[in-house]
Image (cartoon, rainbow, N blue to C red; front, side, top):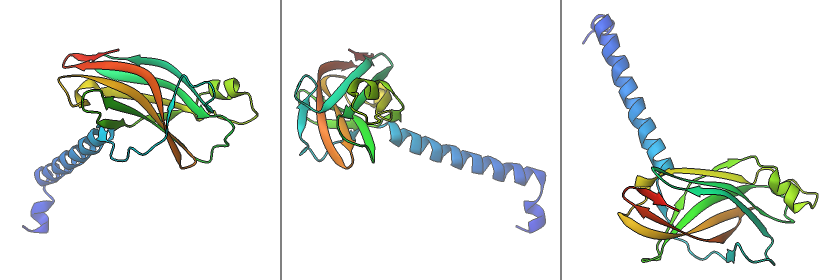
Length: 174
């Protein structure tokens, strides 16, 4: 093909359409993988109960609701620790198989943790939000324990929320 043939309006439109299709396919690939549950290989984390009054971890869950999307929202912090880096993920443990899956979250700004800790440190970056389409949970019907994987300054810990959810083909039942 010559350069003149490539410069025709029809060829330019075809090339643009092909590029748009490739970009769309890449976007779907990356957004799909961001919302997919990943099997948790390393299970050697310390586990703390959300109900442990002696724990330095403060947790508040605004909601765990189901339907077509599983939504988990709240804040979580390690009291007395100045944050250099923080990450919080939601972890589901299949009650039958004990297999654990990590779900990605979006970290959000929440001032309630700073107010609740009241120790002079800033925990405003302790909020998290998860919206996961229920079809990403790999089961027709299963029950899951819910945990938070909190990683503060490269020191991860699993926090057991002491909550069980049931997932069916029709969605999530809190």
